[in-house]
Image (cartoon, rainbow, N blue to C red; front, side, top):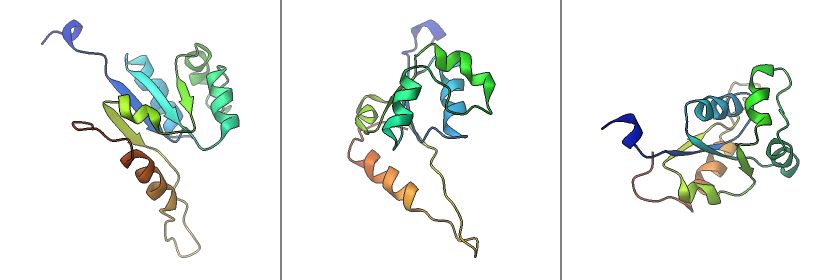
Length: 119
């Protein structure tokens, strides 16, 4: 199948921190339609206005400024997505045991919106 015949895939990235936001920008640069899910309404609003929330990552500013990344606090975009990626933090305690509650919460939000055939 020729590249021009492939459908444009939709990606939702859960968590737009220092891993998720650069990944979202890379996916946008590669031609994917990208949605983001974050917990903070303020962060969602800033990104939707084209503001780079990772000021120490200036290379992503031009793409974010184009306002092509759609960000929400709900998981609704998962329903339309072909690919879903979880990029939430897993902080560790003093015993180096990871706190998986952000991953579990993201998984539950995704599960409510899954469709057959998603990656």
